[in-house]
Amino acid sequence: MRWHTTRRPGQEVEAQVRGTDKDAVAAAFAEACAQAVYRAKNPSEYGDAEV
Image 1 (tube, one colour):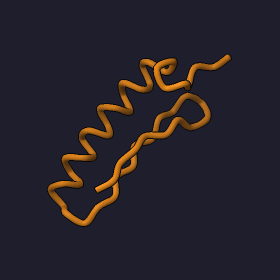
Image 2 (cartoon, rainbow, N blue to C red):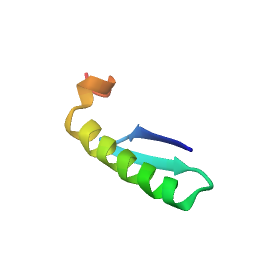
Image 3 (tube, rainbow, N blue to C red):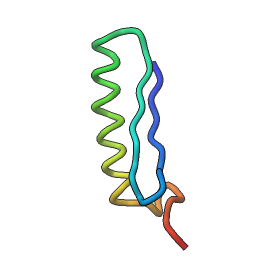
């Protein structure tokens, strides 16, 4: 199971999940989405703050 979030141009945050177990992917996607929302609200904690 693998997931991550990425900051895109325009302050959009993308969540991606990869895996083969459907239930694990669903759980990881929920976690990735929650982190994406948090990251969008707190960009400086991830080094995403605009200069």
